[in-house]
Amino acid sequence: MKVKLLVLFLASVTISVSAQSNRWQQRVKYQMNVDFDAVKHQYKGTQKLTYTNNSPDTLGKVFYHLYLNAFQPGSQMDVRSRTISDPDSRVKDRISKLSPSEIGYERITSLKHNGKPVIYKEVGTILEVTLNEKILPGTQHTFDLEFDAQVPVQIRRTGRDNSEGIDYSMAQWYPKLCEYDYEGWHANPYIAREFYGVWGDFDVKLTLDASYTVAATGYLQNPDKIGHGYSKKEVKHKAGDKLTWHFIAPEVHDFMWAADRGYQHDILKVDDNLDMHFFYQTDTLASVWKEMEPLAVRCFKIMNEKFGRYPYKQYSVVQGGDGGMEYPMATLITGRLNLPALISVTVHESIHSWFQGLLGTNESKYSWMDEGFTTYAQNLVMAELFPSKSDPQRSTTQSYINLVKSGLEEPLTTHADHYNTNRAYSVASYSKGAVFLNQLGNIIGKDKLESGMKRYFNEWKYKHPNPTDLKRIMEKESGLELDWYWEDFVGTTKTIDYGIKEVVASGSNTDIVLERKGQMPMPLDVVVSYKDGTQENFYIPLEMMRGEKSENLYTKTTLLSDWGWTYPEYSFSIGRNLADIQRIVIDPSQRMADVNAENNSYPSIIKGSPRLKAEKVR
Ligand SMILES: [Zn+2]
Image (cartoon, rainbow, N blue to C red):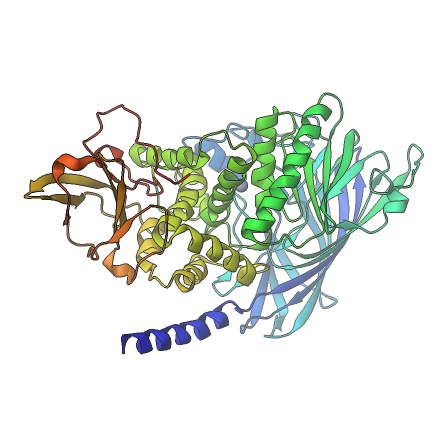
């Protein structure tokens, strides 16, 4: 009877969830022509946007991002940076000091909706457009837009003449339609942090002085006219010539480009279907970049195998000179780094091709799903590239625990721009997001996490997955109920702390009493090591999981009865003398983010001594 009910339950779940992954999403097609003046650092653009309303709603307004307007004294980004308690050292008060020729701007000079002029209003970094003709469900509309823009001196990500001397890092450079999804419009002002875009196709023609080498999202359509390392043919250009670069990028949600007169352009093959392009200044960097390049190729191979195939035929690693930032089919990274730092940032940004580039979560709302998952995969890839190093996930977990102890932690449900401090944002997004996945592997088992992540990629690539979408994938994959984990670890700042309260002899048996001291409940592994050299794991499922993980990490595992979360204590008995026991350890694999590890072992560890080594788990 139980079995039959379970089958029925799973069948109904499968139907509702496959409908969920077919959730509607809007679609864009951009055709842009840009004439770039590299003397004035200004450009004029035309943009034809074809917008398909796949929503069931009638739209009376549309919104565009005008990101470059953030780089003006008094902008929201400027004021936020000057008033937050721990400003980004790269920004601080620098925006407030920009002169008129150094600021960034995007000014709309004309906008037509289906060929007719329409009323629009620039409000900081957002263009608000009130439509005369409403956009009905299932219809396609065109917007013809003309704009003038100026490239700011580089402050963050976008800009010219940065500290590494790169001429142009052109991210967030065009009027970009805001996303409208099942939660409505997302016309967030640009404060500094995360992005969200509409899926679609880009066709970009960029005209600028022929002395510049351009790297970009998308495939170059006219390599034999351009040269610059894109063509096998030698292509010569005369001084003063202008070139028109034509790029096409299908199935992406953004378009970035960069240009420099000193770029070296290398191409390496990952396999027959994927080329990696590298752009960097030649002076002193060549030897470090040449060492990094094959490691970046290996990163893509590892990621393809572990998380699902990267589907584009090209990826570009571009020296932008200001931190690292991910874009579809490309990244801008700082170039003047030593090899470990250079490979680390390249690996991180490349992995965003999966967690952002293809799994296009609304990063503003769920920064932990792109930054955290990227950090988790980065830890896996780095451990494979440099196997002698200790597991980097340990230090990621420690950084989360340090934030908890600082008292600054805010829940992962916080909008990326709204965290009170940069530290709370970055540790929550990068570290706690990575802990979330690593710990999920402890809850549902390592194999289920791996197969679940592949399933997540296959079902949600080219879409906008949210936390619940991921939860349902993991529930289906593991057969466990996981609401509680999302509710507490994502929705709150409750922490985990379990301890061994008592170990007492009871005749020829030993009784062990555990206590839950933290507010957040978890299933537990408790490994007992005996003096004869054998080991036994005792696995205590959390009752509200409604099942058990299957995982074979230990030579022997004994399944104990469930622990209902409200009970502060849990006892079990083992059929061995107390004198036979050498050690008892809660969470021997150290995948649980227990904020106080000192009470996790028996005999208890003296404060300050190193944690016990994980047993049989990397
Ligand atoms: Zn990142």
